[in-house]
Length: 113
Length: 116
Image (cartoon, rainbow over the protein chains, first blue to last red):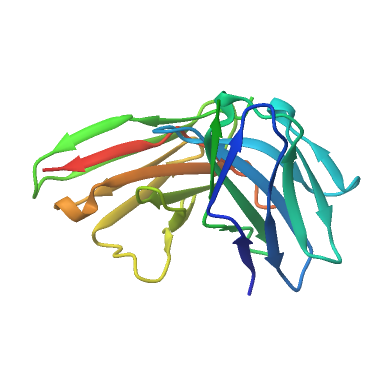
């Protein structure tokens, strides 16, 4: 069975500092990986996705992630965060024929001035 | 492109009433739609998967008679919470997938349900 682990439930960081949100997955088949952001009281917005090809994926708002098959990871990074990046971030994996998304529990990013 | 809408965005109802939430794919045809429930500060819980023209597939532990799902067309799915109770209060999110082999889902903005 597939699973997703977001290793940090909360990440506090100062504005303009770099940040990494960690995501590990387990799957016995090929996977497609996603990062979503959710601002308070809003729906989900796709940040970036890995379907195939280059393992370094660039997304919106200056975020990027690297797919590491050997370490089964898909960590999200941003070199310099803004106050407006404060939100909940979800990692998700789509694997298998049923194409359901398997979700991590989320990481709450709090950017402080 | 790939926009999904939900209506209403917020609904408050009395205990015992039924509430219908609509999910529409605005610029594509969605063969499959998903309904999720999200508790405060929690991840998304998949409730059911609906394919156009067929019965929805519910996840384990989700009451199909409580949460009625209808996917009557390629652009519309509805979730009806029947005889709602305060414990049904939650954030409900739908997503849509353009085709069976499509690997990405497109999400609606969510519906906040409050049952008094």
